[in-house]
Length: 250
Length: 264
Image 1 (tube, rainbow over the protein chains, first blue to last red):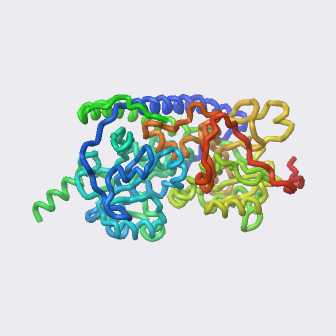
Image 2: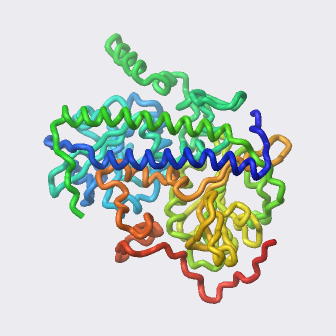
C-alpha cells in the first residue's frame, strides 16, 4: 500500500476542512432525498398473505406486531441458495449481522422482520447459531413475487391505517447496503472498502465485492467462497437463468 | 400521530413513481462513492505523541489498539469520569458496533472505543449493555482533548470549544466523534481522518431503516434530534418523549472520584 502524502497538522486540517464542506453537502442531499421519500405515493395491499412464524400462521397485518410501520427484508435462505442448509446467503447474513437492538426501531413505532422460504425449524436453528434476534418468517405464497423480491433481496416498507395495509417503498441492490454500517465504517478508512470497483490511489489492496463477504463464524475456516457459487455472487441474474436452464435439461 | 398518505395509487402508478425516485437514489449513491474516493486521497499526519490507555490487558498504546491490523477506527464515546452511565446517544450508536466488528477485521480494520471515564466505570456499563467490542479508557491522557472530543472547563467557559473543525459553545464536557488511523510496516501511526456531529449519521443503521418508512426519523419539533433515544434497556418503563428536552449529559454519581485526573 502506498501511503498518502504525510503532512503537518495544519495542512491535514486544511485538507479535511475542504472535504468536510462536500460531506455536509452530501448529508443535506441525503436529507432532501429522505424528505422526498416520505412524500411518495402509497399502494393498498389487497391480497391476504400468509406467513409461518414462531407462533404459527401469521397475516401481513400480524407482522406489524401492533406497530404502525413494518419493514420486511427478503433474505435468501432456502434450498438452492449458497450455504443451504447450514447458512443463509452470505450477503443476507452480513446484513443480518448489522441488525442491532430492535428496541430503537420499535420505539419509533416500526417493526423490522425478515422473510425467507425456509421452514421455521431451519430459521429457528439458524437464528440460534448466528445469534440473530429479529422476527423471521416463512413465506408460503406469492408474497416475494408480488413485492419484487422473488429473485433478488430487498427491503419492502409498509404502513397500516387500522387494519388497512399500504406498501410505501421498496429498496434493493446497493440500496440495501445503506442499511448496514460495515460499509459506512470502511468508507471512512484510508483504504475504503478495498473492493475492485473503487477508484482508489494506485497500489491499494482490492478484491472483488461480494466475494470477501463471509459468514461471521466462517472467516477463519474458509476465506474464499466455494467456486460452485461464485456466479451467484458476481452475476446473480445470469446464474439464475443458468440454473433454470439446468433444471429444465436435468 | 396521524400519518396522512401522500397519495394512494394503483400498482402501475406506484411503480412509476418509485422508478423515477430510484434514479435520484442512484445518483446519490454515485455522489457518495465519489466522496469516499476523495476521502481515500486525503493526506495523512503522523501521530508523534505516545498515548497510553487503560485496558483489561493493562496499559496499551494507540499502536497496540490496531491488534496487528493496518487500520484502526476509534469511536470517541461520550462517557466522562464519574458519569452514572455512558451518553444515551452514543449508546444508540454503539448498539451498532458488535455486528460489523468481525467483518471489519477481515478488511484489515480494527474497531476500538475510547472514553475518558476510568476503566472500572466503563467495564460496569459495558456489562449492563451487553456489548463485546474493545473499549479502553483515556483517563488522565491528552488523547480526548487532542482529538477534540473532551473539553476543559476553561474552554467551555470561554464559549470557544473546537468541535467539528469550528469553534463554538458545546453542551457537554464530552463530544462524539470517530477518528481513523493507519499503521505502516515500521509501526509508525498516522491520523487519516476524523468526523464529528452529523458525519456520524451513516454509522447508525437504525436511522438508515427509519429513512425508509413514511414517518421517517420523526424528529421534527424535538429540542434535539435524539431526544427520543434511550439506553436499549430503558424503553419499556414509562417511555415518554418530551419534545422540549434539551441534551443533558448523564448525572455524575455522588462521591465519584475523578479529581485524580490530570493532563498536560
